[in-house]
Image 1: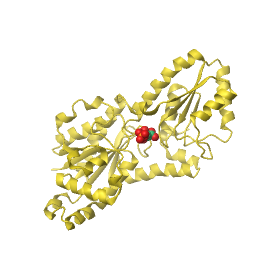
Image 2: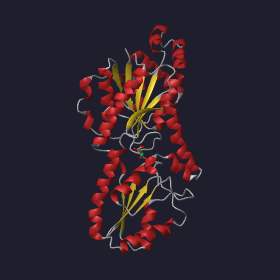
Image 3: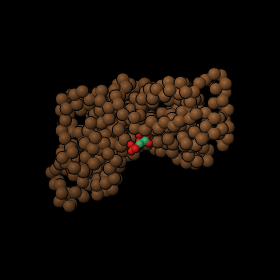
Image 4: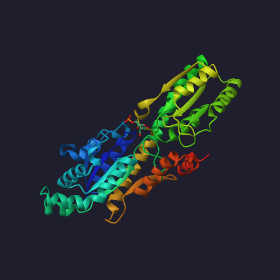
Length: 365
Ligand code: F6P
């Protein structure tokens, strides 16, 4: 009988609760035991944070934002001594599979843990912390990843759990700003999250009809200031009473100089004489109810994650559950992580064409 641990890690995202709910209920329906690992990887280091879950424990979770089992960015797990403690606690609980819901960093940590697994167990037996009898039933650790992040920054999947709720939240905020901007004929510079990824900013720009958008993957040429002013003045000359500029938090110019909302505001107010305000949306984007899409995505992927645990052999590379062309699929986890990281490398090397081509279809020009 499989014994599955489920955890959320890294920044929370709307829909994570739906994912945990689906994993818990699907595990039980398939005859497995299931444990919630609370507070992200921190929970693996503290036995009292590893709690068995039943059908009722996730009642009502589908529509609740955030992650009710908690999340954290845990430094200790990234060192081997931390992973030894984690291995001991999992074996003591009888857990032989982990479903991790998080971003690329959290999923990489999980795969590393799996790769060290038999070695960690022998070391614990040598130290007298576990017996051969305790480790015998858990010789293999299955890892399955699910991507929970508002940033939509993971390669090899069309959408991460949370990104469409966050996009919705941004659109609602821009709609609210629109009415006051229109009244005063003002300009607003709106900073949105996304870390090194411009998906939220770009899609918010498309969805709200913004005048100008800055994203990390495709910076404007060095004369972007003139270009932006020209476009905004053109829109104003056509009778537009408001101006909306969206700046991704990771935006920069071609020389990798950060483009800040303050910088954009100075140009709009000093050069174009527009009455300009800055709004930083911040964590509002990560909070609140999951959208219908995220509930659906989390549920379908949670069911698939449990199936992936049941299908795994010791040789199967750890999978990550994706949605690709509207189908729930499995991808090799470390391939997806490597492709994700190569976008950051391309940006660092100022190879912006490559950065764009590595992003998913939504980014195509
Ligand atoms: O990865 C999700 C995210 O919200 C990013 O968009 C943002 O850069 C970061 O997390 C903020 O992290 P924190 O909540 O730790 O401030």
